[in-house]
Image (tube, rainbow, N blue to C red; front, side, top):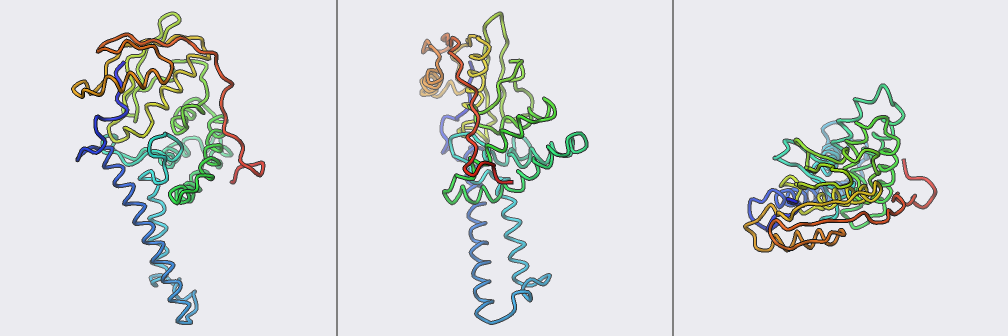
Length: 304
């Protein structure tokens, strides 16, 4: 199996994944600075005894500061602010030059919602409500409070479950952690190819998935996307009682540590590995666990 989820060094200058992380940090820094500036302006306005509505007139300092903060808040999703650095989830992603666009839940919803607005209006309303809440969840997560991330994940899992078609579900499911993705009735739906953020290549022969490779686009490596894909594949194989087999072929074969890292990664997911270049790796089906679903947030229902 060829695997490229993490590059040989995530600190190499010019590394696309490092650039995504740097832009993420800068986006959060810009937003915090704008938030502080708005709070400072509010205090100074109050101290001067001027009516607040004067500052909200079009073009007034307060109105300009609010508009800038709103713009920067919307850009949090563009850069994946609030995402767990090494575990793929609902807030993960970023701007990728390799994919000519943004990978993120808000961008996916913006693309999916118009296509299904006529045939599934209630579902699309749920989808758009989720997207509207994302910037505020990102803000809380970046501040260290991840409670709202769990709630958002629950809501996304429900939206995926209620998707009006397989095409709609496919676009959204990859934003969930691997352990929360639904098990498809057709294993081949887990294949990923083309211009997406991840490629998962395999064939099915009798009762075995012959895994050819899992390749993550360079800008998103090291964020857990490849692991999420493998977890989903393993859970699906277990549910369908299929073996998984492949060869140990790291993408970065020139890196002396790549082979050992790939072997460790595979063993962590239940594979038996011959640790040599091209060595055989295999995984028998485990007893499938009950399909994971996010715990409903306290209070009975998730926030709308």
